[in-house]
Image: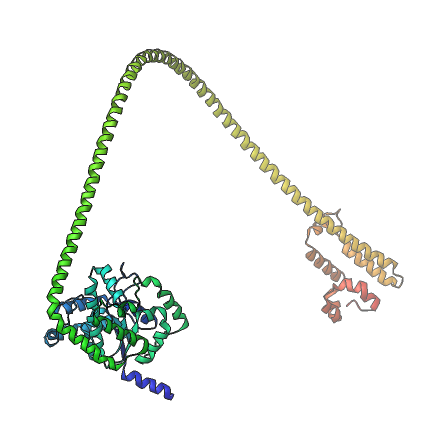
Length: 549
């Protein structure tokens, strides 16, 4: 193992698991940041919260942990949109141990044994010490990211989504960012802006990687295309410049100074000299809170009541408009009904006149129909008689047709039998003709051979009289009984050629004319060649002076 691998192995052993803890105010781009981190290789929770109309790109946070956080807030006597500090007495109550166990179980269920995951929920800003304690118990090293967004944009987004007054939205922003910063001071953390994430995320991610000591496993060109496709302008619906805060004297100094510090940190990095200012602002906010908390609460309640009354008024106005429209529609329906009634009356009068005329026409038509019915009845009776006669004639013709069909079938059967008999006779005659032709061809072939042998024998000047006499003797033996005029010749002609040849050789040997076996035994070359011995002797053996065996 190389030195570099050993150092990396030691580093992994010291912090086997890393949890990226995103601590940012609601509507500050925490969802977009969590999604980018997941594309870079951080594991997301198992039960993701579903996207909504106010967050179409998704929340990318655990629905289970969000519900647990709401229960923690409720157990401390507060809720997610409370701008006051989290109840410090809650940390000393027995409830902490109960929720710590539930937090550990939820962390295990949502992330299993993941060594690099991202946990994001803006509620965590209010009680970050709790989750840092859970991380420590679970053996997870926290890597904190503190995203910041212009408080005016945040307030506008909250007003649109939840109907929260912008002034209260400013206080909520202050409480979340100040608590998250104070709680995580001294930990490995990184400050970033929403603008930086949307406009130059590669530079931001690289700086984040170096600051937190984390190497993003999927930081590649391919993944950068996915991130570019995700980070579009559709994620942003409100835009305000930093000067809209710093140059606005109507905003509180707390808001302007806090945003100025966080904005500068996101651009230049954290400056410890600013910690005192942030502590002062947080302290002044805590001190001043009791003085006007009730007033703000009463104002919020009044605003909620006013909003409720306004909603009820709009609802009542809507119902009134619907009722007025319904009355107008009813009046129109009455007018339409009266007009339709007049039309019906006119049509009824016209119909009555037409009905009287139709009644007279109906009487005349009835008389015509009666006459027509009588005439048709007579024609029908005549047709019935004609059909009865036609049916009787048809039956006679059908009987005759059946008889003719039976006779025709008998004739056809006889014709088929005759045809089959003639066909069989014809095939037999053809077969016999072929046999006779084959026999005749064989006899012609034998005669031709014999004639050639005799001719060759008689004209061969070099043959001795004895050899000539021998050849005539051979010819006589071969031709003996082979003529077509004798019964023996006719029977011999019917034998297959191999059998007939074998009998001829046996006759030559029996009469002492030529012994084929002895000739082959005496002449091995002839036996090896496979040539007929008699043919070889006549064509070659005589001239070569060979013995007949």
